[in-house]
Length: 192
Image 1: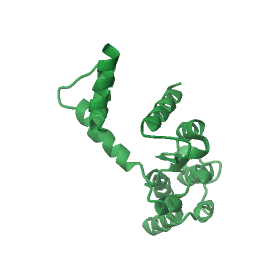
Image 2 (image 1 turned 180 degrees about the vertical axis):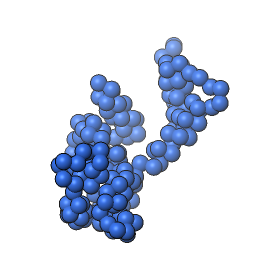
Image 3 (image 1 turned 90 degrees about the vertical axis):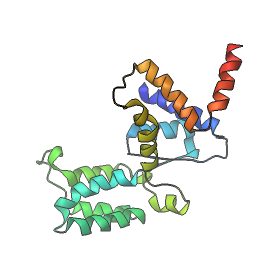
């Protein structure tokens, strides 16, 4: 239920930003299935979900320690392959080192990486995104979260009730997104 509500909120935000029948909606996320599903459900063919490059690299970094005597060289090679849309080469490099089924999932970083990339092949298009001038990472959003949300909520001595925090954040987001005046105009109209 929570993810469905977030999909609705995302769609409403896209509408306010000018989403229309000819609009493409590129999105970047950590590969969580519910996020990609919401993009597909809300935007259909106009949506384009891309796995965050840096989250993908976390899987490769963990696997690199098993896959090569020089993990950094191996990792850099796989990163370059991801950026060049050579996903099958990444999967082939992982396949050479997949742990046996007798190894627990928690102790099998290569198997985890192989599963992650195999299940998300259709969400890997870093080369295409870069050619279109689109981001391949969600760092800007995560940075904004620290600036907009955490900076306000995590002040020393500050405490909030959930309902107050949500209202305060809504105001803060309106200000950051240059929607302060339109927001208050709507409030005045609704009060009249």
